[in-house]
Image (cartoon, rainbow, N blue to C red; front, side):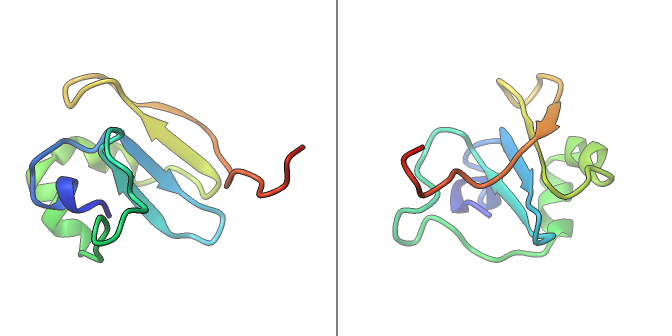
Length: 87
């Protein structure tokens, strides 16, 4: 989970349920791969801050949800890790 989302500084705008059954939450603005940008956190903490995330509980692995703001509806679609190959 991106630290900015966990601290409530920015809303979650991207939620990924990857094919390994991991959940990734990001603010859609800052690099989640930067040093110290991500932390592990129990989902209950985040649901308290943003109850709209419960809508995504049944999102299957291999899908992602995005929204343009914290008040916008979630748009769900297929997702996979970008290929490391230049194809």
